[in-house]
Length: 634
Image (cartoon, rainbow, N blue to C red; front, side):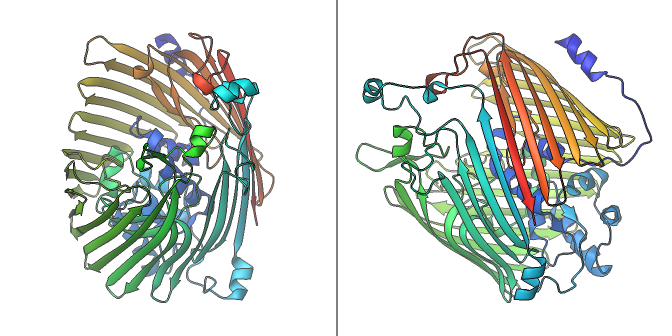
């Protein structure tokens, strides 16, 4: 494995004239969502937001730059500087002007260019009237499907006698997963859409009389008088620091310094396929000078596991309804929620309060409230929130010191009592967990094309260095140590990226894992991977090929990697055992309106004769699948 790694990482490349590299969407996703290696599996919500922004782009000359708040690598100060630069200079004429904005370093510009464009500056075209909507409104329709070339036991034929005795051995639906998305967008003023999603094995029609297993519909109107935002349908809500109501996603700890003190007062549409983390109802954000008022009323059907007495035991969040047992948990609990957030903003000081009533039809009723604040003064910013719910409270406080334009220190303390309960909290360092206590210390510094990033959080610490060389080569080294319940894990990642001016780029990566269980012993794992990307016909045709060899002693020393895939499909892979994973991805843009994507992947194991177990078992040591997507923009 070491020899193979050295060969791959030292592949000679033909050098041509250096040009500014452009990071693809997949490059950005890997850097953001896989920044902590183990946090990728919890990042589907953030991925859906980023995919939506990538598809629609944000106009840097827009009156409202709130969508940039969803980009975790941007600080609030950088977002304010973008808006101020556009205002003082009569708009941003070209994307290259980002380098003239204070605080916009080279690495941040590379990430940002994937999600923004320099459109018209306040021409009046975005005024809401029938003429403008008909002329400048844009439609997007996409369909994607995943077709496995293997058969899991849940899809095999089972006799009526067997199913009578074991009714959960066979899945309702077929092997293919597919989804359909439609969205109408009028600049950043109006957004209307519907998303339909079908997981493999879920029934299509049959028990679902409406066909697809999951639908998400929404309509959003922005900037109408005092109404900042008005939404009806499925939405995500984020108030304060997220102790009572989070935005539906959390970022990795290495990006925490950029997102802290970004006080949430947002209600956004839920356009993704996640079947948890959203509300169904109506929400609005109103502005009265320096005062903001946000209100949400919702009634949402939830999946849940019930106790023998019919009360809610736990919420089911995976969205699968493949068997009789899984389908029996579908929409058997109704959650009624009402929330209000009041905030005053003046001269860098924000003070807010949140009130929330949460009622589960087969569970408990919670009345919760919190107070939050954030203060920005020069190079210092601080913020926090204290929340009361059920029989306890939780709190979080932080401070950020910007030593220079490119060096930042962050400290965050969190405390949560066991009696505190909130079903929709999203704390900065622990995701949905709120009954935790600890101190987080983070540091980030940038010197020209060199970036250092690190943090310490209780029994966990991480150090990362990133270096750009001649704007064509990038080197990343990451070390992470974690001690959880006396089980220690040490991870090392080294990645080398090379870009030859657009025609060819490649990435080689080495991962090593050492796991030390509390009872003694050691479990080792390693992987080496390589990705080559090619662009033809002036970028209309793109080809990506990848291969990864992995060897781990067990699941504890597993390897997590990101694999390029279809838009709106998060390619997070967890590999363990001994095997090889390979894939090929083709993207062809027939015109500005029509694009096709095709992907084929294969995983071969050398240490087993069958894959997985129970209904998910595959009676082979390999599995192959194909995916395709059609996107139409009008």
